[in-house]
Image 1: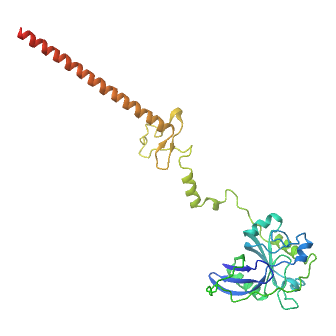
Image 2: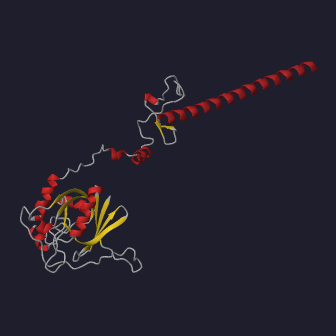
Image 3: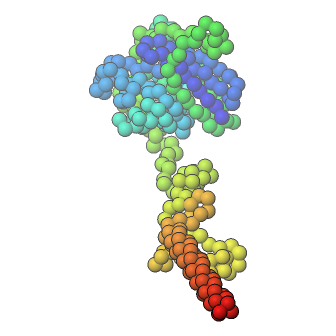
Length: 311
């Protein structure tokens, strides 16, 4: 799978660094722009370029590639050769959906008069070279994951993590084609209509019932009411002729995680054990009493015989 990582300066005042990986191998690295144009954002009621709102800076987070279309005619002057559509998966990108940012448009396009990369109308601008690399590899890879991350400064000793491309200033030349149908919002809506619909995960989705979830569910529901214990050793199964256990009033017993029967059956068993112990104790006491009585009668008879003989 292809992975495109774009590290974005916090102030959005310079270019970002885009890194394209095919598996674990870095195949391309270049400048990118993840900064909206304040004038465009203000025209859509977002003067602060809030990433959560339309026409603001592209929100950070993870995106999944969903659709590609070559730019046509006049579109190429502003957006380059290809239009790529991504939909949010996690992070602030997913949170921004609640404010109407349902997708992210990714494209190329010419530089400004000062030869620096231009700001966007809320999308992500790549270099034309990076865009060509992505499109050519998509034919075989099929999947593309995009991560917009906050830029992190590396320590002096982290030379292997330092990008080989340094950030640059953004162009003072703004975007063009701001009116429908060539503005960025119109193009994005057009691609959304053509893209495959994203199916929401339902409660009955099989992915929600994987082995780990079932294991957690089994552990958490151990001892819950409604589970029954059934004997496995023949018809009787150690539980009478019916092969099943029944508690007071015919209610099914509960089995805990160790296989012990709890609830009504356990209480009935405990009461039975106490009653049996009491009955045994009383029987033993009665037996001792009878034995002592017989021994007393025997001694009395012996004493009378001796007295008679002595007389």
